[in-house]
Length: 205
Length: 205
Image (cartoon, rainbow over all chains, first blue to last red):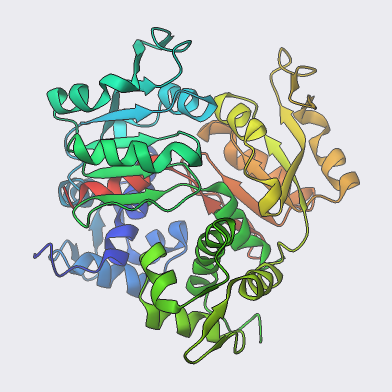
């Protein structure tokens, strides 16, 4: 297994497999096949076998995949066999929704710092966390050694905040602002932009 | 141009191009090249030319693409040269954030109905809209002829609500619940699942 050689598009499908396998495990299932997994995620069995085989031989001809073994392996490959601390920047509606979201911890993530530049919000609590001033962000993230941030600030502020996150040592940004961010090649960015997802579907209507 | 023949992966990239081109237009730019657009979206110039050429000849060798012309064409192809009415089901934190989100209307979407099954929330207002009871959902969506819904209910309720949306005639569902939905082949589903996006990045950390 060589991290440099696996195409990003394959890496992008692994979390989808992981989510579906977790759901199967939650239902008490022990084994699955590439066909069955494919039906759950809408990807062909051949593609799934090819994707998974990039990382080794995890299934057996005829008996399929052990769900718990494949879950462990996928978590290990994706490095979510641990809990990553996450900083959240922007305590607006979306920031509040993410801060209260229950679905992160059992998938490898925990929001531990929340920032906003609105003095009226600084000091307020969301759940167990106190909203801190963005002016202290670089220092606080560096101290905590945090590598992952979620960005829920307005589009107009997103690039400036992203620059500061990079300066603070963040290597992965989940960007909710509807603009593309310019970051160094060593920093990964993923977008969540509901309008983009909707537009992908209207084509078919 | 034949809708049946364009691979879905290409359709999925068009909204990304649209967003980047809109940003260029907002900055006052008139023309762009596949190279320049590629740098904004992180996709190769060759791939962009190939994707766009599926729909006709929109650029000229040497002079590149007219941004306003390409914007118009992409909006037409993606059918967002109009405003689609959208129903939102689930008025929790995420539902509130989406209901208040300002980024839909200028990209082709307008939330017009909001539902929740919590009697305490029914009748409450979010912006200009009153939260309605999910029990009236099928009828209300049918009456309004709505084809697009956003689903922000808990995972445990998502399939049941999706079944009702399909019954109401919805053809595109943006699903925020972290489970895969079983819907007829004629209904499109897109997932927004922040943990999946985060997991795609931790691989590289």
